[in-house]
Amino acid sequence: MPPPLAFPAPLAPYAARAELTRGRLHAEVESATRTPFQRDRDRVIHSVAFRRLKHKTQVFIYHEGDHYRTRLTHSLEVAQISRSIARTLKLDEDLAECVALAHDLGHPPFGHTGEDVLKECMAAYDGFDHNAQTLRLLTKLERRHARFTGLNLTWETLEGVVKHNGPLTGKGARTNDALPAAIVEYANAHDLWLDTHASLEAQVAAIADDIAYNNHDVDDGLRAGLFSFDDARGLPLFGPAIEGVESEFPGAPRDVLIAESVSTLIGAMIDDVVAATRRRLGELAPLSADDVRRAGVQIVDFSPDMKLRLSGLRDFLHENVYRHHTVNRARSHAKRIVRALFDLFTSEPETLPPQWRTNATSPQRAVCDYIAGMTDRYAIKLHQRLFGGGPFI
Image (cartoon, rainbow, N blue to C red; front, side, top):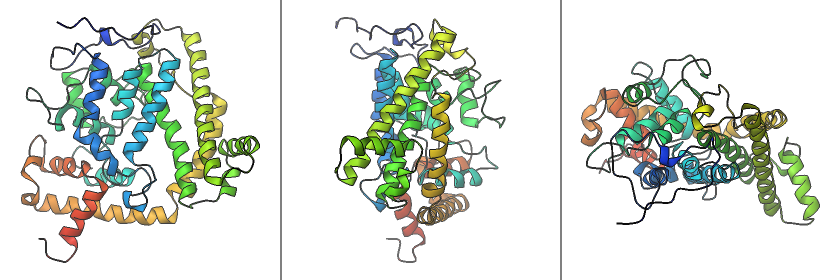
């Protein structure tokens, strides 16, 4: 019999504790070599949905270049930043990493463009939400275990995935829209406390997502030529980072200056979050993870000054990257692909693979699950085969 597993220590009193987990929906004998949160992380990494992220859009569709971020590389960057922040705040690094790795699993092909189309297509059939789709994948669609569907992750991981951006119901909810059906269905069986904030570890994953995408979208936008290096010099946050790097490394190649500036800014954002979070923890003085959940505020966040400057950077990215005409052209093509596939499979359900006709509440939900699981590459190739005008075989 192996010796009992030593849990990570020391953790802050308000950290989530693997040895005190609320458990899994389906009881299992836990691992002798991994904590429950480490086991959750490993199950996410070994999932089919995680592997598919390598060919799912972040901003640029996969074939536009080998060096741009995908959902997979983005998720890995978020996980790395999450671990850094969690370690500094004496939180459970494994839970923070797990939520970070899982947070984008439910994204359909072509990123937010694909999500927008599926929302329109599913408007009369309980809608579509990538966060709810992540929960659906983790609890139902992944088929890797004989005794249950889904990955049977711990309460804390599923809570973190669902609520990493804040409460879904009650006073702190970000929207008054009806909850997605997948979240309602699961919460009825496994109460995720939808009216409270999530653990600090989940909040860390959420802020790490912001840090990662704001920096790598500047990086990718520069490398794609969507705006110039001189434009970048005038940006909030990024401009001062460039100035500091040029002062320290005069004459360095431009690609090195960009990389060093990204690294500098990520470090500055992490430092800001840690300092601001420590101030809030000092004011609120939570003594447990549940005190954090009931605090009524998001504790892990930027300082007001960083939020202000980050807002200016985001405005620039929206106008010069996300709405750039070349990105809009790709987005337009992606919309037509997703819409055509949905219309075909709903009007001719016999063309849907048999394995996708189960575990769904309606034929439309089955089609939605099938399309949402596609990679950009698969969706493009399937559309070409079905609508390209040549022979199917």
